[in-house]
Length: 95
Image (cartoon, rainbow, N blue to C red; front, side, top):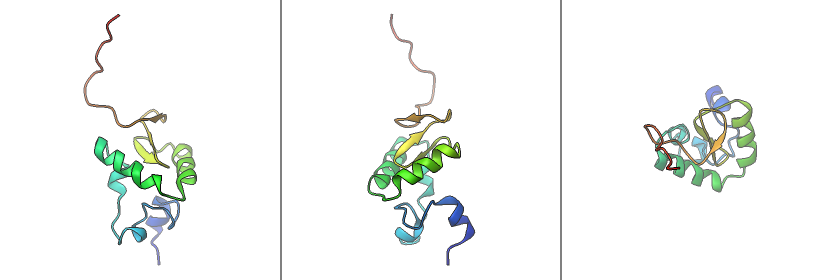
């Protein structure tokens, strides 16, 4: 029997990230990481998931910022981005 926590954290037991599909190992840390390698691994997992579209809808509707949902990274402003920003200020463009 699944816990209530699993029901709130994962859109479905069919999701590729669900612990039941990964030998009981939760992969949540990958999806909420600010490490670029973790984010890319999370996107790879989403790439083969049948729940990708539904998961993205959940991420966008709940304002789940700085995390991967449905194979895309949602930044701190709630916008789809390539991945987490590198620390520090962006370089000034010459012009």
